[in-house]
Image (cartoon, rainbow, N blue to C red; front, top):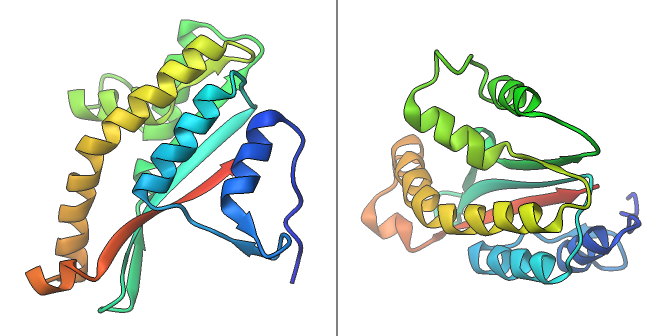
Length: 170
């Protein structure tokens, strides 16, 4: 088994401390409340990092299944320089459509889930994370409905399910 090393940087350290255990041999996937706590720890650090990624997934213990929602992953990237055209191109690449082909919802989700910010711009970085944290209140019910449909869950099955997040930073 490969040891998961702690990367340099304040945020990388926070992410490592909240997601890695057993001396670097095991990974913890935060629940929704754990993720919100982690986001607040990152915001309070007053730092940025090259990227941070939160990938939601749903686990149902009764069904012994899980489903990943890669299309709803936050990927926040910090760059030294970028302009408005780079940001639009980045969103289009992440969504897989040009702005003119996207619905209003797809574009809004793209701006929330695929943002860019300038490296060391902590104010924008924190605003993006706060907006994502608020967006989770809209996103999780939508993902719950998708999980119900895809996994064919009953009302009773819901008591055995929960959301977690794969978290990476660099």
